[in-house]
Image (cartoon, rainbow, N blue to C red):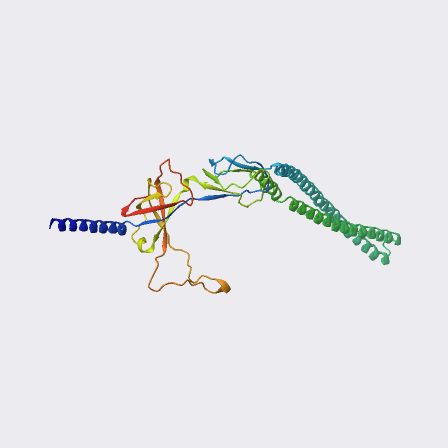
Length: 363
């Protein structure tokens, strides 16, 4: 009898242990499908040229601001010198244009003064013409009456004709003076248009300054420095290699950006909430647990069925109707405290246990 009781007790304990473990598995989802992730910064030069200095090696740790490599700066120093010379020439040109404006203003003032002078002469000629015409008409009126002589009539006529010529000459001079004013006004406007805005807002000056600043930037871009603390990985550059602007040449793993992507079955994701505590175990460090918490849960994964395939026809994967495979949903785990002896590497696999109901408050 005692034998049966002992056997039954052992079976009951085993069943209870299985139930507890199953309940723990249901309550606290666990997956071996986890992966270490980090922000990988693509180091991209801003200018083109051969590398003349390469002080780093593959997989080396670098700090923010450390020199990664230097591109031959000679071409960009020449461009900077040209930009400086162009700025100086632009300054001289603007001074010359300002002098042209001053000269055009003086010429315009002189032309306007000449118009006033010619206008005064025209009025005088007009007054004299009026007087001489009256005298000539008076002499012609008196001649038949014998009150004057033919000589006086001829003299008055001559004086009238001279006054008329002077008047027409003054009119022509006024027209010419007014035309000169219009020409000088046009010259002044051209000079102002060539100069543009006066002072620091001048377009030519701003363009020359912008060219100088661009040349300075290009020279500064010949030194490529680390944008963050991290590890240079898969370095394939060599001394003398020619870099091309805006083409990535190396990768830098950002040391401060590590996280875990854990892929849980969709049947488990419903129990996981942002803020739940998580325990991460790396495959390369089996006995060390890393604490963390659920930062976020993915809202979608790539769709396989229905995607475009050969000849633009949809891809459809065959499935067994009585088996429904649960999809894996990515859950992002933020690591809280990584032991100093653990070296995280992008792509390394790990196991992740999420303790549901133990939400960690985060700011």
